Length: 519
Image 1 (cartoon, rainbow, N blue to C red):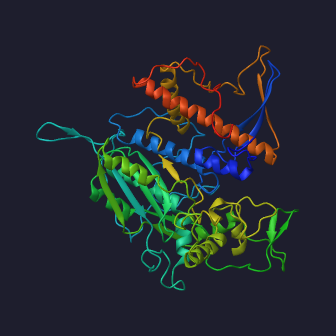
Image 2: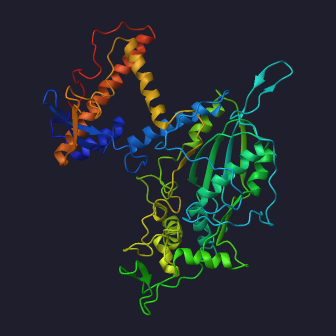
Image 3: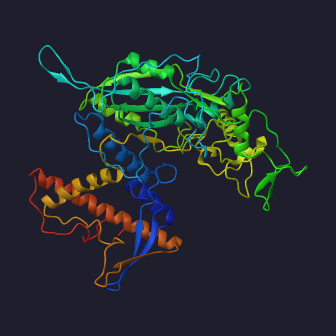
């Protein structure tokens, strides 16, 4: 395996070339045995990462797929047929429970007052229609429009920041604790917003939304909404939406040096000095329910900044909005504003990230979080090995800074298709172009594990294979060759489709002679 100058292709060279060609730089190797023929092949499978710093080509591909999904469902004029499956990456639509419904993470449901907070305006109400599309508007000239909207919401201020940097003017007075708690529970606030908006808009509002971080690291929501909703309604719902956290108080740490000890005999965590068992999660909630003056441990609200735009399908503004909405999907929260790999990070900004992460690390993320031990409470369903500050939840990671869930939230009836179906649709477009040009497209299920042999057992047997550096380099080069062949054939097929070139005599999309330098 030689480079154009005759030198051996190194791993670094293969990785750089793969990035340039848009090919996965960290493929997973699998050995596939065809039981019918006895042939064994090593197959490189793209890693499928959605993070640029892990695998830029796969992340870019995932972003393009999300853009396609967003565009397809945004400006529909008829209700789609739901097609989501449980394993698809689609958020659950918030149900129509009361505003003060119990926390869904709590194992035993507890009733609480449904009375709204007195410091929050009431929600406007409208008769509910089961449609998912917006209203149409007809001009005096008879032209009909059915606009949609682009909405941006963010969290409130936690202190003054230096303009253009996101760094607090005074880190000592900046409310990092509140910023961390708001980030940890931002998804619940967003769920509540969609529930309230549907009640107030009068129809089943469908949305495609992405969560990212502002430069100051506060969570930021961009959302494409199907249909036009009065701006006054959107602003009223934003002001009236909140999420209350009915958890035991965790204001003051109890254990900071000597940690509670696990007792396998009783299944409890105990005080390291007295041996007394810590309050269980259920007991802590019982104490909260018994206190007539109890207050929520935290309340999350949106900030005052609300940006609303009306857009029509098929316009340049609409296309630009989709690219803007998906702009930072390939970056982690902490990396969104830290520059590129070729620039040195700003020490002041890195310190800002570290200070926020320090709070995120120690605050509880869910009822099962190990950090509850720090506050003298056993987590829900405890087990051995829990250590405060080392919860395995993704929200605590420095990359996520509290936003450990999905970064893309899509309503069930957005396009009527799963993300997998959108991926198949895009592949089918390519397949049809190739077929029209007389080129046989690769069979997508040519090595599928559920293809059966004559004995009724799987024909293709897939096995993990340990990858050496040499195997990795060979697999990446193989992927590059394949990608180049397929790309060239697709471009040629499009030329044939446009009538500017006669068809070629080949009937294969995979068995072409390699003409690239890596050959």
